[in-house]
Length: 125
Image 1 (cartoon, rainbow, N blue to C red):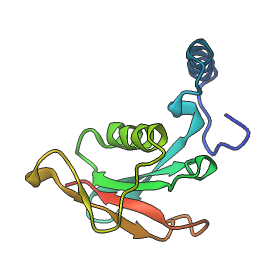
Image 2 (cartoon, rainbow, N blue to C red; image 1 turned 90 degrees about the vertical axis):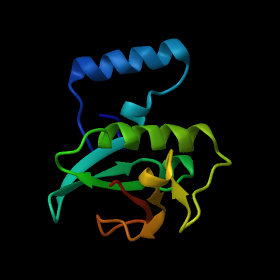
Image 3 (spheres, rainbow, N blue to C red; image 1 turned 90 degrees about the horizontal axis):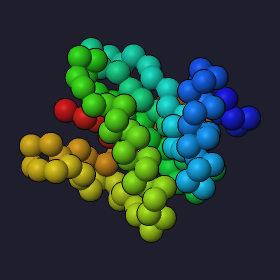
Image 4 (cartoon, rainbow, N blue to C red; image 1 turned 180 degrees about the vertical axis):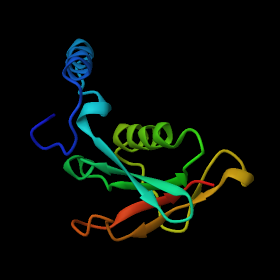
């Protein structure tokens, strides 16, 4: 766990990721930004990022079906995308996605923890 983190990693995984980061000169996203999961109504779940604010970015709150696939990978890809491009912004009401059937509306909602600034909410189909 990094001192500012909210999740703990297995020591060997943390050490491997940190070593990889040292080799490439960058802190790996997986230990630099924490992701927590929570149940949601209607057989859905959510992922919430913790640590984007330290980099001047908004946190992500992504909901997805419990039985779906790719939710966590999607969150990490959004985190990488936003941290990798400081000029990138997601205006409220815009959509993201590869095609019309997979478009996700960008929303801003209060942080589900009850603390901190609003977060970017993305509801996966």
